[in-house]
Image (cartoon, rainbow, N blue to C red):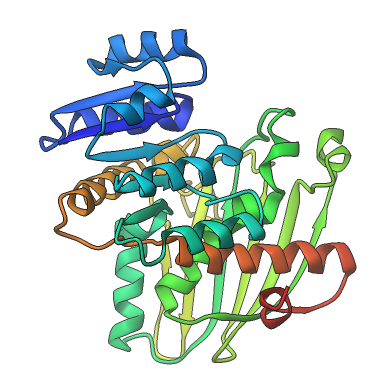
Length: 334
């Protein structure tokens, strides 16, 4: 198949390398708002350079991978669906709820599959946790604890465009909690603090946040996120049940040292960032997309799925700003 790739920044370049290694992808067409960057990247990757988006669509690829800035996602998804081209798009679907709802209105019923990039669904640990919940071996879950702890903050210029800590970072935890448990979030209470760089507060954001989620079966989920986890990139999900408890992301590279005497530090170096931690998941995610393009698989993560996680993130931002619990029904009703 011939696939198009729009956007050749960090995540786009990572996707391009993966796609070039998938046997079914015979050719990859690459474009970017910076044509010279796309030209250099295409040459280095053995891909085909395409001058701009119009030329990319004119080439009629079998599928399109979107790794551009968030504000361009709705337009590119809409153009691809109108042309009958299956789409893989990095999260978020759009910068806000209104934009996300419009994309769903455009795509639902079109018959053209759209897959949104929540790569944790393709991680072996999270998949095993989902199977453990479904089998009943943990018994009734009483508590979940999820963390997304970045070792260092993003560039200052990124923060005002990120949507905030809960929309940009916590949204992965919200999606995976739904996916692993099969439950919906009913209510949230969130807070955040700023004790690091001034640019977070200047953008109306926080550098550290926490949220208590009440699921629709009264399970409690605790979510923690920060931009300042100097020990390393730490993404985990603990599932505590009446019969057994398990953890995703607890291995020799977990950046957490026991204070108990005689217990060694984790043997391996911590993951430096998400591309390393989830490298196999990104491969599985894009391999699955090629199956979607070929018509052998439905989209494993639709815009409607992404909307549910966005609703939770939106509720957390309201809760943080107004210092109160927020029911998801309030956010859904607009």
